Image (cartoon, rainbow, N blue to C red; front, side, top):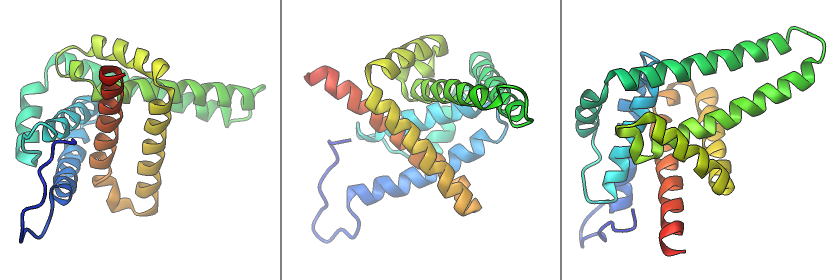
Amino acid sequence: MSGMRAREPGEVFGPRMTLFADMLSVGLATALGCLPMVTAPAALSTACAVLRGAGEGQPATAGRYFAALRRRLRVGDLGAGAVALAGALLVLADLALAGAGLPGAPLFAVVAAGIGAVALVVVLRACARPESLTDWPAAVREAARDAVRDVGGSALVLLAVATAALCAWMLVPLAFLVPGPLALALTAVHVRLTARETFG
């Protein structure tokens, strides 16, 4: 995203403000795309692809987002969404059981939360990878490697999730906008890792 043009003389808003507005519109479109739940990984992956394209001079608009999402919703994308949803429900059920006062519940809750956090990082990093557009297993494998090789980036992903959750908790209507900043954060973490590997 470093190749954005400079502001022209007399232009009110510069390219960064334009990207911010586009990110919000893509975020709202992503929130709508996530509503069926099983479409959430494909919706977030598409948002990352559209925002990644903004750094290459392609428009990051809601129209382009929906066009890309329509082409994507295949059996593999819905299957990835079903697996992600089942995993999230399993972690929530484990945490609910831990809260019921079972023996060893505190340790079990910590372990379940840790596994859930690692799985969340891998899934979100997979959404940011270009492979997720065509091959979810490859995207997850590469994302797992990224999570181990780039611990700082994984911490940034968790920070982005925590910030998004806090914003949505503080003001519920913001929940419909947070997918945009989250997708931008995931894309930035992936671009950061790619640039580091390219330029050493």
